[in-house]
Length: 314
Length: 177
Image 1 (cartoon, rainbow over the protein chains, first blue to last red):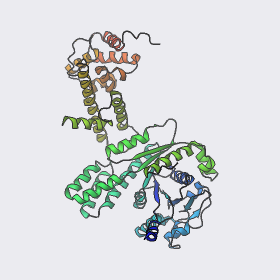
Image 2: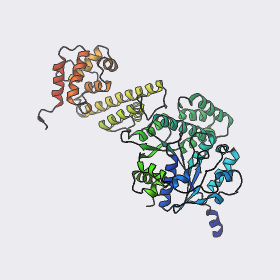
Image 3: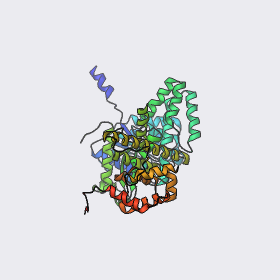
Image 4: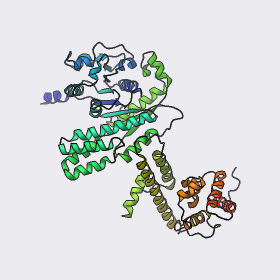
């Protein structure tokens, strides 16, 4: 019996963190790779996955050449198993599954491919899997974001990026609600609200849930659970001296107030020239500049995120 | 019922019921900043009318909360300070309340006076409520009071401002560096 138990508990699923952000150029790849490095440095066995199928470059910011095999090999069924395309990195405890050389048409894998990929990711032998999602709010990206224990949004202190972040939060939230129920009536109600409100914001997700609840108690409860479990995190990146230091906290307050959604502000990263320097040298920022403000912020953020699953080692 | 209404006001202001005056004021200013036009943190989140609605809610919640606060404080202090109805007829006794009385008698809202004087209504309100801790520095304050008094056609605006500033300072504490 004990032997059975052992083999039962052995394939423990990795904890998944997914880094997204509506817009390109906000620093997702640099933050993803360095969060992964920070975890690896803490002794966590970590796999970074470049799921930015359209514009993958995680290998560059980790400081290594293109791996031979990439996700597209898996999606094209050239390999059966993700383990076959895991590449070691120069950093102990860190491995990479690259999205490089993926074809553009692969940026939108079919539903079955996506489900297969998600299934394989959850079976990876690692403590943590860190996903770099591409920009945008396609269903594929949202689904990867939602499957993660920690969804992380990178936002810049500028209107376009804030606007994208709100768009992303709304889209992900409704995607989450929609996936929580298969009842056609409920699903249609959510669609209606989305179509009506998406252009100017959701009036009140709470009202929507109450509405559903009054019609169908079970479905209402399912939505409530889904809404309660939706807790994205935000990072404000490239903060300069004159930028508003309260932005992250204020976004969190507004989300709670306006949507009833808990968005946790997990930290800001100041605009740091070390990042550019390291990228130009094709090295990881943390490896190259361990004392830089960027490195310090990343460590702080990873500690904060780790504390979410009660992991307080160190 | 009163209590639930009240708790909602605190929630709107982003503070716990029982927060102190300073904390409430700080949070109020922050909430106003979050929902103000041109605020980065709520960019694209709200339509103009929703934004106005939100600001209005915050404003009203703050009015009620501060009123409650001064009331409970007043009862603690043996009704020493009383906020409404203003009905103060002697400017020397309480120049702020006096301004409020006159304004209310004229049927003017803080906003209207604000448009006329170009002084923010929060300042005007704080002047009326004699919230010394939240008033601007005396150099500015003096000008604000004079403008405010003028807008209400008070005969001697400078005199009222002087009296106001005088009451702000406890008599012993003169010439603090």
